[in-house]
Length: 105
Image (tube, rainbow, N blue to C red):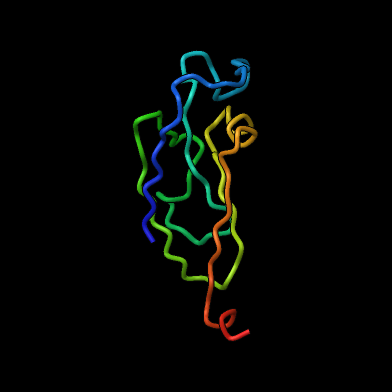
């Protein structure tokens, strides 16, 4: 499965940013994101490393093979320095991977 994660957020964060936190320095864009899917078996370039963030108006194409047992996975923002703010703002969700064993239940 290919997912194009598009950053369509506003250019200014609605929460205050603590610029003393590593990765949240004042020279970084206020709004940026990168998605990390917990529990998925994915290629390294689709893992959502904290330093691979992108700004509003940009996107990242990730490949999720979904070649694993059935599972309920969750994804969230992983941007270095501000992921706690972005998750609090609602940048998270669930992904259901199904398999033949589950369908047989």
